[in-house]
Length: 105
Image 1 (cartoon, helix red, strand yellow):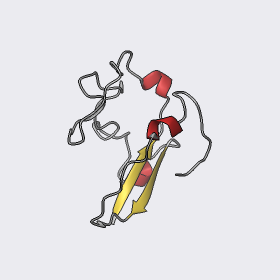
Image 2: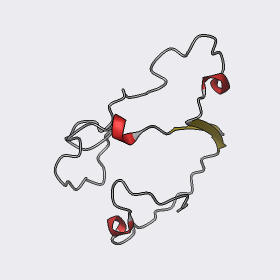
Image 3: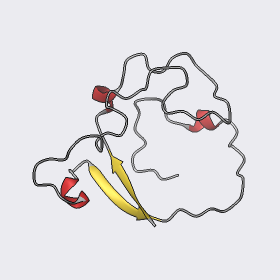
C-alpha cells in the first residue's frame, strides 16, 4: 500500500511559455519528464513541494497539506497484461484550457 499525493495549482501561473515545442510523436520506449526535446512545462522545480523545507511547526504530512493538496491510500497491483491503445485517443480529449467537470474515465 502507498500514499498518493495530489496537488492542484494554477496552470496559467505555472505554465512555461513555449514549452510545448513542435507537434511531436514520442517513441514507445522513451523515458523522460515533460515534453521530449522541449523545456519542462512547469515553472516550479521538479519535486515541488517536497524539494524544500516545510513551514515552521510542520512535523507530519497532514500538517503539511494545504487546501489544494490531498493524499489517498492506494494499492498498486501488477496484472501482467497489455492493453491496446485506443484509436483516435487524442480526438476524445477536451481542448486545452477547457473543463470537463468531475468526469471519471
